[in-house]
Length: 95
Image (tube, rainbow, N blue to C red):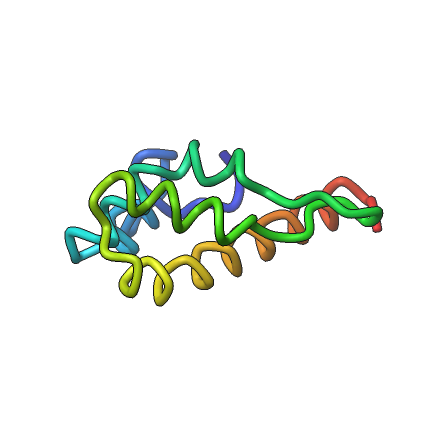
């Protein structure tokens, strides 16, 4: 894959998956719930608008993540998804 320096993709250097691996139990729980959280996204006229945070908090609580911890971590997850969506749009030539 072009743009990756990771040894998994033929380059040299640390893999982002390893470098940014969550260190806490709660962080790993949120990362593991990624597919479920991704399906709780809000879509607006301009495309992806963010996560439905109340639904995400309910999912996290059901999986045993304390709501106060999920409340701290989910906005960062949402920011990462929004940044990734913006980069995809730039690469694809969309606005």
